[in-house]
Length: 109
Image (cartoon, rainbow, N blue to C red):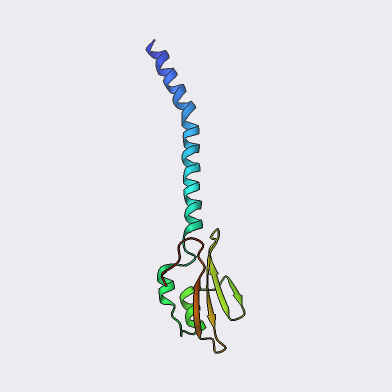
């Protein structure tokens, strides 16, 4: 009788183990995707380091290669993130303004 109970317990554990693992994996995937979508396109540290009056080359040195260049603007974004940041330069390649278009939480200005 005890052996039958132990076999039943093992069968029940197997039956619940696979769906439980799937639920945990799916939950972690949803959390990760949510984090990717709501995080800022760049770090606060980089945002703070870039200042109006800097040269374009200095901005690129801090930020890295831009994701896109639109005339006098450099734009940076992240995969799965609905926001971006942009930096505008005058004709002498001096930064005139920076703009945060984050979809959720804006960087400190």
